[in-house]
Image (cartoon, rainbow, N blue to C red; front, side):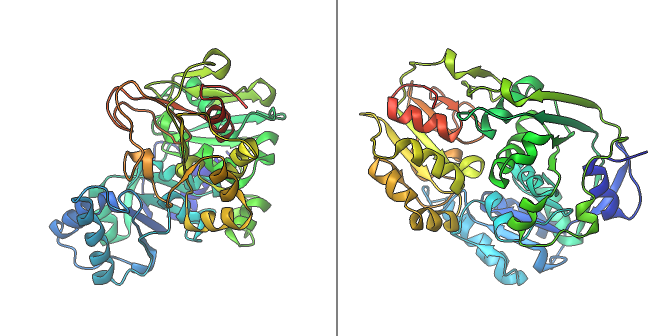
Length: 413
């Protein structure tokens, strides 16, 4: 009997063939610790009686949620992060380089076939390069830091097959939002989402990253893509035999198979305040907006900024609308400056901020107040996430967000 991609990755890690439901102990290839969780991780690590991490070269600490600090208590997390790295000899420390989920692949840590854990739910992002990656709590992370391993249950897999050509105004964000709407916010709980089909094959690495990032919004344990030449180029590697084998077998057993035609996708938004409440933009046109946010680990990559800039080029955002642009990493920021994208966005009236989680987690500027409306390219629109509980958050693609910023009301590109 064949295997799904996630079954192959876990089997390779544990040294024997596994099937869904098996309880296995896996060894971590890398772990990611973000600043917002560091005080809790370190406290639990000490409480467990550990004095040394199992392998400092496999630990990555990234300060992204709370830099620069917007509240005095945020500074504590920064100091704890730096102190722990210093004491443990951890050189993989990023204090101002960008968002954790962008850096883990961009900086070359995660490779196809790896098993990776992180203290943030959107750790599913790294499945875009063909890795098993998932978010865990600080207690589990403390245990991995001391031992290098953790037990888990092998997830079953939902296969999502997409074929055809997407319309010019449809991005991968629209695709994953539609899928989340169909699955619902709990429809993939503790399951792997395996994406395939010629539409997926034609997608850029950036577009795949957007989809993997949002898999958790359907409750998924992980999301995986077959690594290909685009993946190899992005990861700066040549795929070995194992990495090249990471494709779902024809005789693999899937819990469910969902088939989509690319031509059926349209621009959509997740409307307040549930990420699985998906509505075509054609039914939302004309809703007045106060702010547009372009950025986050979901849609803060160069491709996203360039798509928005193409729409905004030579134009200006609507009166009384704030457009906040937050590149996902320092590297992306520099590339966007070098190719003129930042210049276009700035001339269009955008507020360009430092690379960080920023408004996505309600930090470092841009929060809103009662009854204000924001169209954002990040991954969650929960109550109170970007200000008061009465702020209305609509999630959209970069193209739809840019078009909305120009119009001052919700519209599609």
